[in-house]
Length: 321
Image (cartoon, rainbow, N blue to C red; front, top):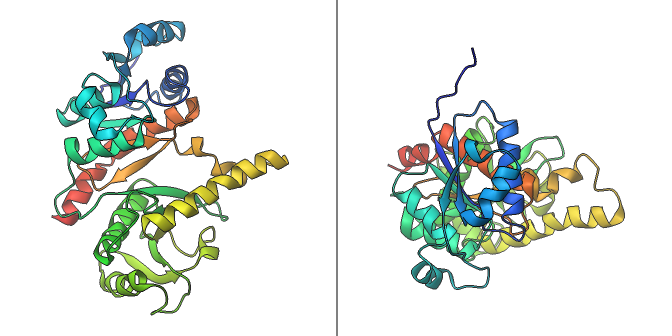
């Protein structure tokens, strides 16, 4: 007798978002179902059923997913707020409506980043007590471990109090999603000594030092990103985005020079991580890369399930209550 899995979570994926959607999105769902057979989740494929159903049938998974039909797509160059108003039946807008209504437990998309941020802020809302949501990026460590850098672009200008909260949000993520026990926190700066840096860093340092909710180890420099100096690295979004784009270029350069198969360099490929979670909003929202392939889509869904399984957002609520 076969054992039937009881489904207890619904994960939504925008099938129309991304340069190679919906083909790569469907392949990503296939990979997810193949590699996560014991995960108690139903995948909701949100998009144009006239395009999706033939692809789902081709890969023999139509009976293993649910399709939510939509007729519109938010393009990359569209104004996010305007698109939300003028395209209510787009895959992104419908996904957020389902998430807000409790029909989904997590939602992921490789579509318009601005629209994803608008949906997160206005449909899902920020957790009470969180000053500003933040987005983080995984950083491969030379010792085989994984670090977290935040903010990486959502908040170009920050206040010390916001960086202090980013440290808490990053620590919760590192512990529950990355599996790092008592993660260390470092403030990205131009020197290790206390008192170094610009006005933002100088004002943030004492807040982090007095924060009993984190394991603060002091300042870290750019040369420390890929070593085992800090698990969670805090900075404003302007700095973090520059670091992120530079790190992403490592893989591109390596591929052009013929050594992208190096075990460490391979870990810089975006597909390994799927997407970037928005930390500080009330439900799991994951933003994928615009050029996402099947592996990236698979990992977006997997990240969503893990955030639900660990009650990640609930732990933020508890910490900030």
